[in-house]
Image (cartoon, rainbow, N blue to C red; front, side):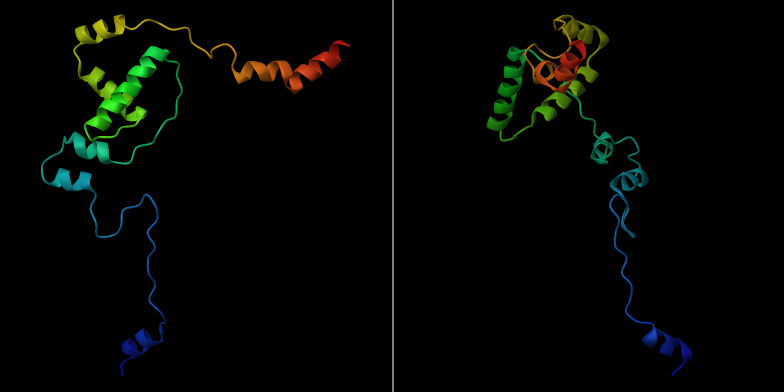
Length: 142
């Protein structure tokens, strides 16, 4: 036997690479790079499939408009496309983005402004009156 064959036999078990989340596997090209190599450089469908960082947010909405969201969810379900509220909101953002400036302003002018902040009677107000801060304040005055 040659030295190379002996070294291969005594080397031990082969090591297997474990893929790390977020890194492409060796030998596979991403859809975006495949589309770019095919000449479809501006494909928005491929770009939307790429992993994006998500942002959590909260907002205040009138009950009537919230009911419209629920109705749209039911409408999508009846069309055999169950949808989440966040998907509906994102679809609305895309629709607004596609509008002309004149149409966009017209829609914005049709939406009444709301007073921002939490509605009265929330748990935040209850914490300030019954929480540890209220006890500490009462002891300081006495």
